[in-house]
Length: 304
Image 1 (cartoon, rainbow, N blue to C red):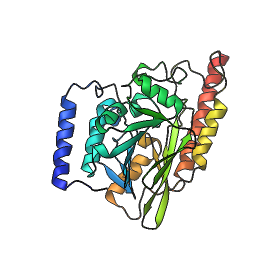
Image 2: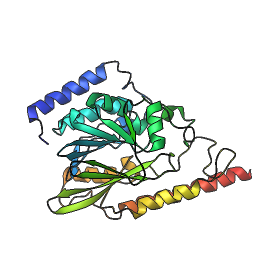
Image 3: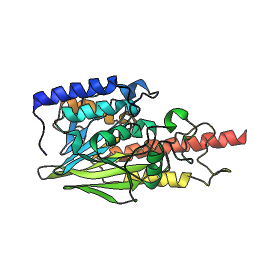
Image 4: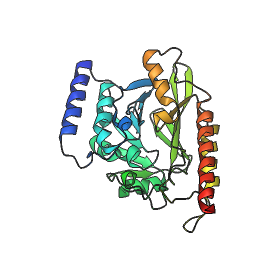
């Protein structure tokens, strides 16, 4: 794909950001957010045709193909204009986005998708549970954080396509595979693809959250509203651990050290600090331990 001339990139970046934030746009109205989530981050070339376009605290990744762009996650509603500006700053055109893939439907990862889909003409893609939430503009009823009002609602997305576990999204030479990793939400999805520089192709994992966060009163163990969810959650964690993984990008960069690797990448590209074959296994082990701690906490509360 052709890139825009650099002077035009700068102009579009400024105009896009200023105009979008100044307007009262129902799809980009601010929602409560951690300060890190709305801290700007320079767009970065990660490897091959893969780029980082998110904020300092929330990931969004762009994949370039000869037939258009694939974006993963839209972060917060108010951050959609900045993602669009980051894409323009890299020299790409917003209208070339064909698909917006979603990890999970909470406002910090799905909130900006409605605006980006509207502005680009793209189609959002998510798991069946995630797709329902995107269409409704609200988390599904069995989401562990369903009662968290700050995370639960976001702008509804106009064009949404469901994907099956193991299904591949193809565009040009890119093939992005969906791996269902339910637990953090019922529709959580981890995405994988290969990205190449010359003859060297690497496995890239965009891992959804595998953290056992939940609203007060929710239990991952069986209760009156649902069966036991721990075995399914552990299977998801193991799925992430077992994926071919040369480069890991987590939905929250600070959850996996993605933030530290990006910071190193900004200073030095060779050897590429994003490449870490053990990152997925360490990430999974960290959150498997967190699930153990969560179950122990649930058991202690039940014993009282």
